[in-house]
Picture 1: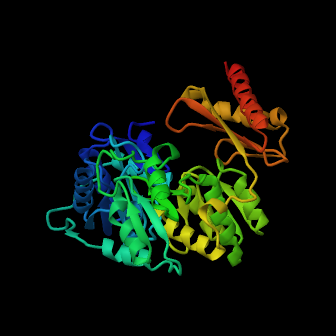
Picture 2 (picture 1 turned 30 degrees about the vertical axis):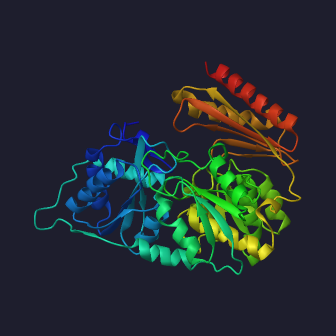
Picture 3 (picture 1 turned 90 degrees about the vertical axis):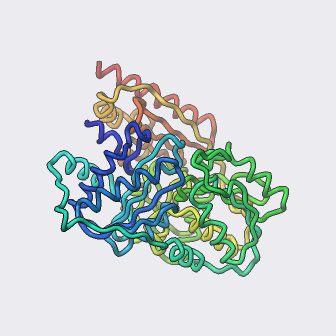
Length: 451
């Protein structure tokens, strides 16, 4: 695998800025993308210090290949996806929730849907060829646009609230500083906000809205007596909910609540990834819906969702997709819809998990050379049923064994590290631990057979 191919994941191209991801590389990427599909591209970037430079490089490559570009500047990823609709595509310079030293590029097609990894690999292959700049008289032009206002108008129009919700916001110094406060104010909410100015180092709390980093938002919600709090990641495609008591709502429970509400509209197929809790199955099936699983990565969730014609899909990292609204995960849109579903149900955030069984999760990792991962996973797949006594084995992304009581274990190779990752879940904590331990033993036994 080439160095460039190592930068490809389900999230696009990503690596250490100015070392793995450089202006020179993105100039070539833009030129190759233009040769693959010429036309007009929307270009945007997140708050990272290297993002404007890398965006200019990608834009110059597109122009050198004969494509036109519209530069929108700083904005969240979902806004760029929205502005890509009807064009040849869009390019967002971002590393999403990763630390500030990372950067990357996420490309969108003319529907506002993310490119798949196979599209990025095709781009890499194209770059290996002799991709030429256009002549002086046929290069593309570039102009600046102010489309974020169009996106904001669309975002604020998605739902109307009857109640005057009191909302706490924590954009985490990321791109939603520009959009989240305006969207909620336009929807009639009153706001309290923290970490609401762009900062390329994400010094307020880091770029990922995980429970351990949201103590400020929790305190804000409690001290001000707010109804709910929302936190977003660096580029705005993920979010986390804080309830009225200042507690982070578990991501799988929030996902399960919305999924169960969405199937009440008549369309029954919900899509989540293979690493998603059985609490989603419990709530969706209780509401008359069906749960389907896809490989990890919102691009795969979207692909399955479109095939099934389902109303909603998501991952427990807070990346949710409402295909009738947008084909890109959008944290602010998701939080607005979440709030509207709360209003329709008459529930407070803390009440969405009432009556939901508790599932316990265990995680492990086992060192494994990348060169043997493929053979190891074949061996694990062939032995899985015998080792776990499960009722079903799926190999969509790693090996997932389901048991009759909704317990399950997932054995999945890391895409970036020399590790095999294990996730297990059960309503009994001892069973979750036993499944994880048994998975470690299975992996070690399979490794022994390969030696």
